[in-house]
Structure formats: C-alpha cells, structure tokens
Length: 97
Image (cartoon, rainbow, N blue to C red):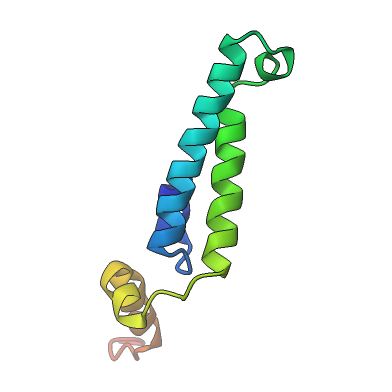
C-alpha cells in the first residue's frame, strides 16, 4: 500500500509510508499467529486482509497529521509530470504549417 500511494499521491510523507508498512506487517503477523492458535475468527479471513486495512488506515491518518513534503522534494520525484504541464502550457509554433 505505501508503495502504490507513494507513487501516485503527492501528499504521502515518509513517516506515513514507514508506519504504514510496519503496522501492516505487524497486523498480518498477529493475525497469522491467531489463525495458527485455532481462533475461528482469525481463520475466517486471510491475514493479508487485516494487514492491508491497517496499512491503509495508517497511511491516510498519519499523512494528514504530518507536515507535507516540500515542493523541492516533490519536484525531484515528480519531474516528468511537471515537465508535461510545462509542455501543455507552451505554444506550438509549428501549428497550422
């Protein structure tokens, strides 16, 4: 989850991505242990599901409570998108020729 959101959502912070990874992993491990201990509620759902949900909730909550990434950092990692915006805004001198 942190990888996908980090690549597409510019607001995600490194603290949110790291915390999301850790909480998702811990949630999956705890669920796996509960499943191995024969708890019926844990055996009904694959451990990846609670891990994914914890990861998703963590990345969204922590992102909104942390300081946004600086514009300089965003420009470094989203340079191609910024270049496309500049190209769209420029005038094509060869139009109509």
